[in-house]
Every structure is written in structure tokens, then in C-alpha cells.
Image 1: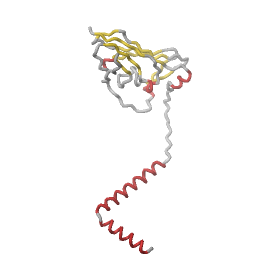
Image 2 (image 1 turned 135 degrees about the vertical axis):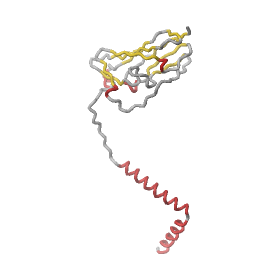
Image 3 (image 1 turned 90 degrees about the vertical axis):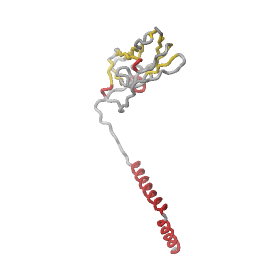
Image 4 (image 1 turned 60 degrees about the vertical axis):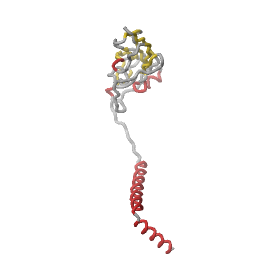
Length: 196
């Protein structure tokens, strides 16, 4: 046993004398400390509670009753190149109670995200050149709009302000912002873009 201790001391002296081993030992100590700290942090039981007083019911509650807010889109059948591409976007509430939806990813706010898919006849998507806003989650209460029972809200959006549409042809528009707004839309509208 005494011999093992002596051999170990000799090994450690040689290891300390070698410069690469010193760096390795420093790094090893730092890494082991960091790993220990990370494991300790993972073990901490953190309970977070939300103390929000502005509780807005999401459209998911309406989906269970079968009377969710739904979208109806309208656009002119033919539009001349250079004219405004105005999309009429209406949110309907068929329920007997008021419902709310998040106005993010809808025309009820300025074009701050790509919530529409615009494709030509070949299936090529028009380039989105509008703004892309970074959002805090969950959306604050001020980002929700109320739709009264058996009522609707309407807004319009000029697609030329956000999409690069310049080539004449037939285009289709699909609403793809359902995950953020909570609105239901199975509709696709189309228009023909003509030269003057």
C-alpha cells in the first residue's frame, strides 16, 4: 500500500511539472464545477404561477361548442396591374355569446407578419416583403378584439404593401394565421391580375 501511495505522488509531481497537464487540470476543474452547477440548477424545483387579472377567453373554448369565430375573405375577381389589391377580411361570431380573438396575424393590425399565402397558377408563392414583428408571449389583453354574439368585424388589407405581386396571372389567397389568432378559415379566394 505504501508503494502505491509513493507511485501516485511521483505521478502527480510529474503531471504538475508538465505544462499541458496543468492546463488540462485547470480546465478539468472548471468543467467539473460548471457541470456540478448545471446539475444543481436542474434539480431546483421552480414553480411559477401566473397572476394575470386580464383573462381573455381564447377561441379554443368556442371550438368545443362548434360555434368558433370564422373568417370570410373577399377580393375582386379581376384586378388591373398597378391597382390596389384590397382583401376584405371579415370575422363572424355565430355563437350566442361574445367571443375574443387575437388581432395578431390578421388585417386588424398593420401588416407585421406573413399570415396570408399568395400563390400563382404554377403554385409559386409570392415573396413576402412586409415587416416581421417579434412578439411577446402570451399576447397581452390589449391584443384581443371582441366580437359580439351573431355579429362580425371587417377589415381590409392592401396586399401590394406586403407581397411582391407584379406578374399578370391568376392568384389564390389562403389565410394561414389561425394558430396565432384562433380564427377558423377553410376558405381560399382567387383573383386574376390583368395588364391594362
